[in-house]
Image 1 (spheres, rainbow, N blue to C red):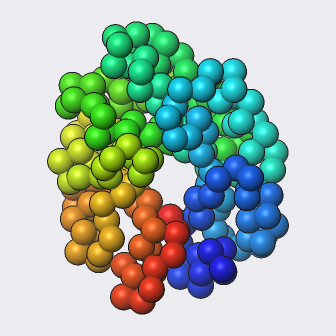
Image 2 (cartoon, helix red, strand yellow; image 1 turned 135 degrees about the vertical axis):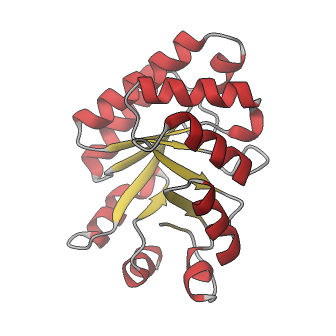
Length: 201
């Protein structure tokens, strides 16, 4: 149903856990809807080698977008090199497999200075997007965070606002703040005011 709804409403992608990638890729074959999945989800605390392995495997299964979780612990402890190297390794693996890579910063856990540092690391590593949240960290996107990330990364890197946008008005606010993509479980409600199911557009 998720895949069929995404096709019907012309969403950019469905975002699913890795175990469902193959099934969604088969269901969406021939459509314009992409399959997105998550790497190091939801804590970002798996090893870099594990994240790289995940990225390679899910790309082989049909994922064309990878949302990796920042190593928040490394960043917050001051080891920016480790956090940056982690991102760069996944970006290299994803790009090598033809996939777009987004970096989930989990902004609810970071100070503004840490958000800026994390976003800069993502840009330096060649990430395609920065993304606010996993949805598991106790909070979602805010317009403040979206605007801060947009100011930090400029216009050449995408910004994905995830969580916090359950209405059309909230979605519009995120776009005005600088989001180029919305990750929401309320996609259908936003575009039709009907019941919502998990989609990414």
